[in-house]
Every structure is written in C-alpha cells, then in structure tokens.
Image (cartoon, rainbow, N blue to C red):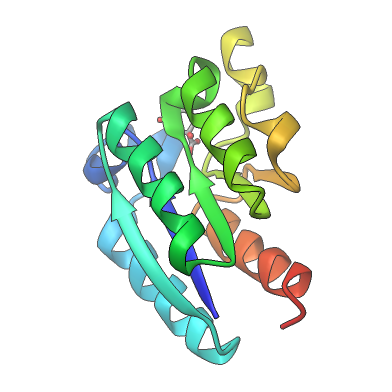
Length: 144
Ligand code: DQA
C-alpha cells in the first residue's frame, strides 16, 4: 500500500529557513522519520519536494496510478492554489494536509486553505510531528 508524500515550495530549506517558526529539523530528517513510521505501519512512501506548482499537480495526478492516499504540506500554495486543490479532488484519494507551524496563529492570510475542503483533515502546529501524526491518521483511514 503506497502513500504519496508531497512537500511544497521552500520546504527544501528546512533547518535553515526561519528556524524559530519551522524548527531546526531538515527535510531529510523529516523524511527519515516518516520512512521509519511507514515501515512500522506497513506502508510504502513515494516522497517528493517541489518548488513548482505544476510539478506538484503532476505528482498528485500520478498518484492515481499507484497510490492509495496523499500526505501533503502544500506550504505557500495552501493559500493560493486552486490547481492543487482541483488535482486532489480529481484523484478522489484521501489526502491529509499538514503544516509545521500553526497557520491559524500567524498572519491572517495563512488561516485560509484552498486545500482543507478537499482534505480528510488538517494537522498543524506540531512541527515535524505534524507529518507523523498525519501519516498515522492517513494509515488509519486506509485500514492500517
Ligand atoms: C507551512 C505554512 C505556510 O503558511 C508557509 O507558506 C510554508 C510552510 C508550514 O508547514 O507551517 O511554507 O506550510
């Protein structure tokens, strides 16, 4: 059972990017923790980070072929992207939206998500643990 893990723009800079907001763990560190948890949950992961909206849309469309669910931190595209939202809706796959920071406790523009209405749910504010909690929630949804 395979799950697509998507990291949106600027998340390649985790560890050096605004550590006070996003923590000090690198994206590689998060992916390692996710991979260990996936093993425990008997899930396979396909992990991608992209700074491009189109690449993220392509990956979501591609998930229809070989994935059963999507774990996504759309990053800034959360607040702007109808294209990513429509792609998730098109796949009809369960998607869990995650954020490192508590987007509801920051600038007002971050509290609106184009993705949330097409997601199973949203987890935010727990740093790297948001991803782990999200993967657990998705696994449960998939009967794992
Ligand atoms: C983020 C929150 C977004 O508002 C921001 O644009 C990001 C990261 C988070 O994980 O906290 O790039 O998705």
